[in-house]
Amino acid sequence: MARRNGKWAISQGGYEVGKSHFKYIVFIHTGFLVSLFMEVGAGANPPTWWMVPCIILILSQFLRYWCIYSLGPYWNTRIYIVPESGLVKKGPYRWYSHPNYLVVMTEFVVIPLITYFRNILGT
Image 1: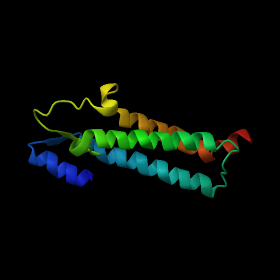
Image 2 (image 1 turned 180 degrees about the horizontal axis):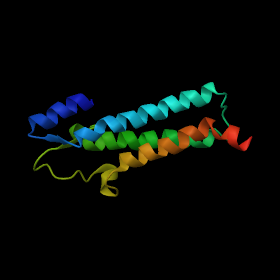
Image 3 (image 1 turned 135 degrees about the vertical axis):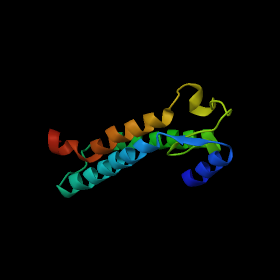
């Protein structure tokens, strides 16, 4: 979807910004996922209250798909500027400029809570 939307943005006269830092974003996300597998491999187990962060994670995914739906062809994992298109002001973008960033931050907090803190807190 990102590739298709990127091609569409370029066909509309759009251009990518921040291209040089995209590799670092991919590196951080990959490192995050690798660290989760390492935690589980080291014996991390879900805490008794694992359902709370799991529900928060599921709810955050509804926000993510609301973002994708609201942006339509403008949605992308990269940053494209389409001249004279204006800002999208529907869906969650009516209230918050970058709601998908909120989803990513939520994932970075709650996914480790599902497994990691049992070992720290002894619960």
